[in-house]
Image (cartoon, rainbow, N blue to C red; front, side):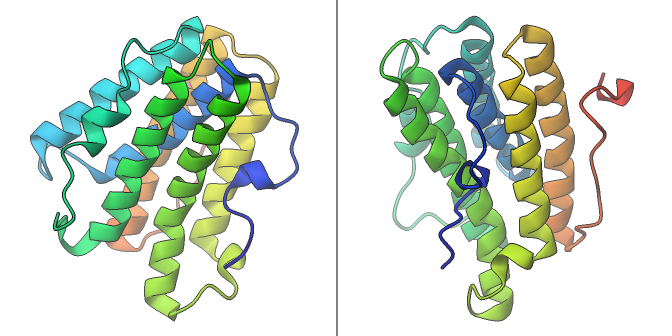
Length: 207
């Protein structure tokens, strides 16, 4: 498999830890689109509650009061069955769990935050890589895949925008853009439609 696990491996200048928590929260915001109230009302609500806390940490710079990752992972079992999109939904849970762990590491060592953020970002890309593998039986050419490339670009743009600073207005726009991207991710995973694109961060349609 390629050594590019996420946009964090593209050689970009990385923002500070608070902004990185916003980045991993954006990864989680897109990933939770694979869970709706119709899919699993309790889990969908739990995931969104956890993300609300990670976004709050990104805005305030304060760590999460508890390790919210356990709220997601403790309820999982080896024989869990998430249906036809099991692998993609499992990856989405891992994204949010690592985003929560990154927020819990704020006010501690920057290296701990970065480690969890890297894991969250890689798990998000693994949603797309798993679809590619199921379709082709391997990973050759995975970075040229339309879905993987689109997602890496979304992550790259988040990092570029966050490098400009982690002010609340900037974070709120990135959060809105990630929520919109989540609807495009769901359309791709569930329907095979990878044609959607996102507005620029300054586009008023984000509000």
